[in-house]
Structure formats: structure tokens, C-alpha cells
Image 1 (cartoon, helix red, strand yellow):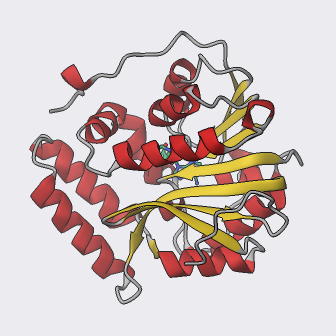
Image 2: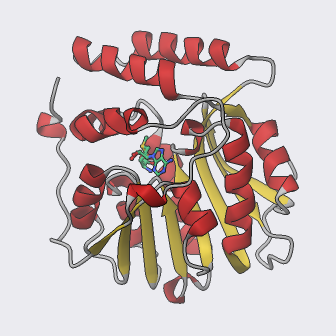
Length: 277
Ligand SMILES: C[S@@+](CC[C@H](N)C(=O)[O-])C[C@H]1O[C@@H](n2cnc3c(N)ncnc32)[C@H](O)[C@@H]1O
């Protein structure tokens, strides 16, 4: 493969979106034993066409998961006047489709990758009130402005953080929710009974078996990225983290293999939907 070729999606309108640069010196490193470096996002920096192609081939169930996200967004009564924060937004290509039918008044996308944000400017350009910020998502939440958001969203990015960082992200996200707000998380997950290494090995095995349309070199790069930088948690572990952060109600939106979409509601949320699982 090497490029998305015929899978290249149509670009939305050229964007008026402004990219606000946040210097990496402001990024707050943590005591997590696995230091986060630029290398952890190098795959996305170099390989957006590869990522776009695997999304189009639906290897990570983006189609079903983002369809459920679209439905959930449409059901939220007040988003047209509300604010939406996207942590690890990447190039925003898939989410842009979901937001087209339920556009928020303000969209803020945060990503470490300048290359991804440059593409996001185009994909998200049809939305009103777009702001794109190059920053570490945890640092942005903990140290950025005090703005609150009606929806905090993160798609397939949380598993790049260490355990302690994930807990901090839940806590910081909960603090940033406006009254009635929700944290919508999409991520790769593992079984409770699996270690991280077992889960990653199983995921890589699935990739080698199922990602058959991907060129061999691209598949090897993708597997190497997963082996080194993916730290999925179990759904129960994520729920525990959310509960500790005060997000006491939750709802599964979609669950496909090792890919989960789940909404966590703040305790004073008025919009119901917890399945309590
Ligand atoms: C798999 S892509 C997901 C893109 C998109 N959200 C989706 O659902 O398809 C993960 C994105 O998270 C970003 N990312 C990883 N760690 C990050 C961090 N600590 N802070 C900000 N962005 C991060 C990467 O640069 C990449 O763009």
C-alpha cells in the first residue's frame, strides 16, 4: 500500500481554522516509568495515509463506532450551542463526518503532531469555531486555560498514556466538564485477565491475520508501533478510573472486538443513559 490511493477521502472545505502553537517546553512530563517522547507519535506523523487507509478498511471498527458516536451526538439536545474538546484529535477526518450532522458551536482539537493538525485544519474546516492546539493532551487539561466543555472526547489516543497518566486524564477531564457534560472515550481495550503484554501480542496477531490489504512494510511499522506504545486497559479498569474521578454513570455506545466506545457522565448530568455496566 504505502499511500491511501483510491481510499483517499474527500477533503472537506479548506479551513479557516487557526492552529495555536503550544511550545513543547510547556509540556508537563510525569513520573510515569515509560517516558513519553516524540517517538510515540512518530507513526502518526509519518503515516497519516496509512492510518486513513486502515480506517477506510475498517480494521478498527471506526465505521460502527463512529456511527454510534454520530447517533449519540445527534441526541444531545444542546450541542449546537455547546463546546467540544477532542483529545488526540489526529487529522480529525472520521470525527468530522460525525460532527457534520451535530456541529458544536466550538470545537477544540489537541494533538502532539503538527502534521496531523495541519490535515485537521482542512477536514474540520467546515465546522464553526474550530481551534487546533499542538500540545500534550494531559498537559493541556491540567495546565491549559480553565475553559469548560460540554463534551470531552478522545478517540484511540488514551492507550498511549501510562496508567497513572490515564487516571490523571480522567480526573482532569472530569474537572473540565460543564454541568451536564460527558466524557466520550473510544479506545482499544484488553480483557481483565490479560496482562498488557498478552493483550498487545493478541492484538498484533489479529493485525497480522486480518489487516491483509496493508502493504507488508506498513504492517510491520504498525505492529512495531503497537508493540512499543500501546497500553490498553480493560473496560472495568477504565470504569474504575472514571468513577474515582467522579464520573459515576456510564454507557457503552459500541463494543467491537477490542475496540470500545463508552460515555462517562458527571454526577450532576441530567441526560440519562447509564447501563451501569
Ligand atoms: C490513533 S490516532 C487517533 C486519531 C483519531 N482521534 C481517531 O479516532 O481516529 C492517535 C492520535 O493521538 C495523538 N496522541 C498520542 N499521544 C498524545 C498525547 N499525549 N497528547 C496529544 N496527542 C497524542 C497522536 O498524535 C495521534 O494523532
